[in-house]
Image (tube, rainbow, N blue to C red; front, side):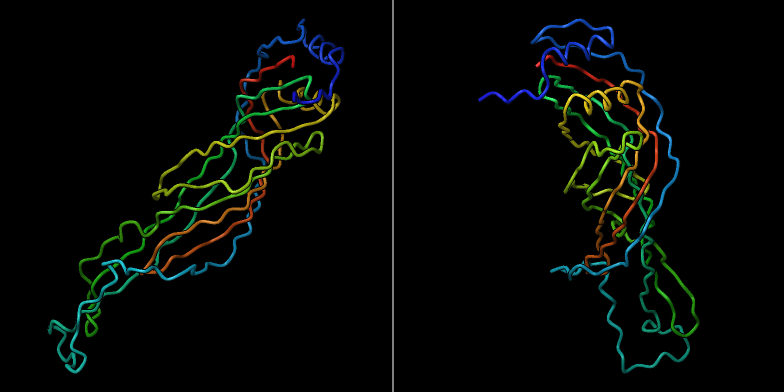
Length: 254
């Protein structure tokens, strides 16, 4: 069965007419929109405690210590068993926020808006380190980063709230962040859908056509990484006030 109409054809025609567009049932078109520039006004971040999610089934090779005969004392410092392996934990940090709304379709007779939101995830972490240290002299040697120790993946939920009309436009849940190395940014694209009656559709459309939305971008995100045979995790609750660019807005008379 076809979806029930929530806006009359007369109302839809009147709405398009207010933008200088004449159309009949079944027509489609594109609004002229000049995208704005992303601008962050404020940000609040609440970071949860780091957690150990679980023990990995196979301990990575880099955590295996050289066997040192414990019954032999380190007297002068030059004995081979005076050297032990030590580690410095990775520093985990990251940022995430919506950067653009695009490919928006407004189905006028259905009172339905769909589109895509691009969210940027940036891994700002620093890898852990390992080195050999002399227990007698404190001398260090063979210091190096532990490859992969700050690679992050995870999940997030995101909500886009339009401040001008006090209305939630999009709720995105259970989005996956693929494994991302330090100093790398990735883009995650999510679909959204919003339904409403003529007044709401018009209010949202008026804002979309300016090319920029003043929003609250609310994100709950958890990332994971592997370190010394364990899977670690960290969560953040992020609230960002920003101007979000909008591009490519289309209308459909059905």
